[in-house]
Image (cartoon, rainbow, N blue to C red; front, top):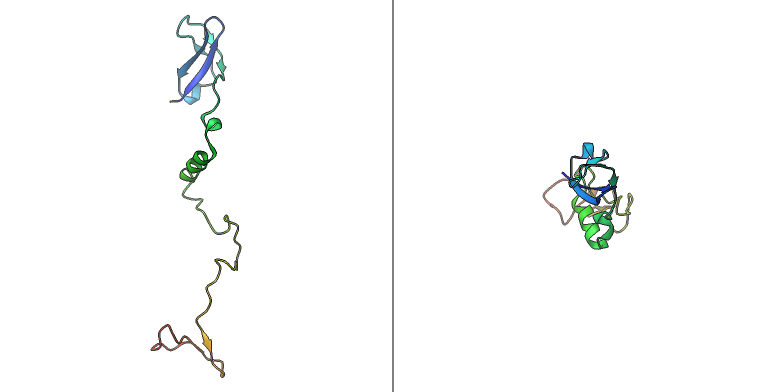
Length: 109
């Protein structure tokens, strides 16, 4: 369960460990028992984190259904740097195609 900050009008601020479903509801002050509304005293943890750590956490938390793809890296179809491999096919004068260095015992179709 996460910690939430509350502000008692009599005693001041306090932190309470509560379920998320009741986080917006007022909480009883541990000192005097007065119902205190929720307050925000501390900044979120991610706001103070350096950029490299924040990037590493977001990379680790990336969903498995949204993997990194060449499109997300900025490469489109037919990209010269990582697109298609050069063909090893050699075309003869009669139009037949062969692969001389691959498997010379195989007949091309």
